[in-house]
Amino acid sequence: MVSPPITGPIAPFSAVPVGGGVIVAKLGVVVTQPVEGEVVAFRTLCPHRGCQVKAVAAGTINCFCHGSRFRISDGAVVGGPATQPLTPVRVTVVDGVVVDASG
Image (cartoon, rainbow, N blue to C red; front, top):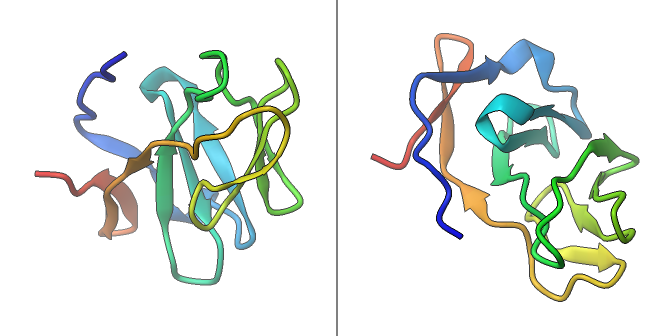
């Protein structure tokens, strides 16, 4: 499944907690801040069965459908049945706003 391109702002950087993240469901993106000042993003589609990840807690991005968990720093699988990481989204911060940096 090909995800649609992201256009416009994704989220205010100030809304992304250090060591956590926010899910922007309408764009299908989860934005994380693994360490202060670093922004990382992934598509919310879980590679296991195509459910949407629904929460970020305790350093992981979590899919409640079957229990897969992914590391906030790189989207790697840390638990559950998924065997593939989350799909990364290139982002940057411009004037305090997280935006797509893929093109």
